[in-house]
Length: 353
Image (cartoon, rainbow, N blue to C red; front, side, top):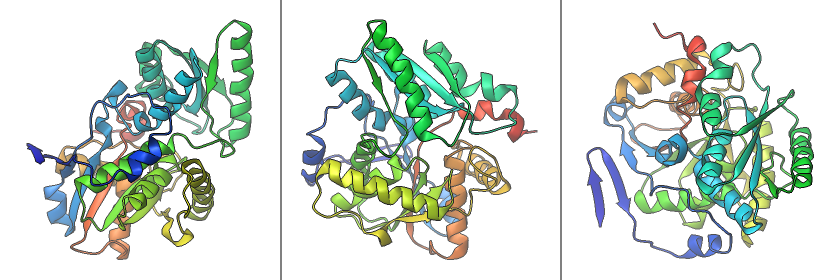
């Protein structure tokens, strides 16, 4: 049965295989998703760009204004609940969608959230520190702490463990969600599920485009598609590192993910595609290509993108089309990972007249 509601195409939700479900069933999972997220065809952009363009609406995951982190947190909170934790600690940028979503999940489950905010983006104005995800996390009652560096994953994780030790001394049972690659990528399991979900909604697309930052979304999505025997090219659009550095990060994460899932065959190196043509001027910064992509999507399709991840992802799609790596007439799916609250933290940088 196929479901249509207006512009939203919900696809076939009848499982064609139990392979991915079987792999994921061994992991504890806190059900935070509202429902399967829809796939929407972008008709006006399809005509303008001469491709068949679709968007996977993971901005509509539900909890705490949605976004891709809800999928990842199902597995982190599943493990936290298994360990009977009453507090969850996590690190992210000041306008991190991950920390906001963590605070929402903690509130839903009756837990305490400790959010450590890194200084990844310098020289930002007052709205960046007070509005958007920062405001929402405070409304959710989360504890905030800060970390002065933006490229020190080990140091940030250690700082969380120091706070966790203090909480244990106070009689609490904390659980740390790590940044560093030394730890099992439980969050990537959420996008293994997403890759399988999309393969059951649209079986015949040629290309998928996803943001590639921490690597969990990109690695999980690619693995999920391949486990579902879907062979579409997956382009990871770099939002934080250059494409060579990001590919190395993806290789490490995919190796750990394959081990976590006990897969006999991992993802081949040539299957890991990264592209950094929309990265400038760097993480959390809005360059001309990002600004133009954000504006084009809003004015053509009425869909909002965030300046840190999804606007750069769409800018990447446009760049790949210009380079001929995405070809006219191909069926292309862009994964919209949410992050809309961050728009309000970037109002000075967007300077919309």
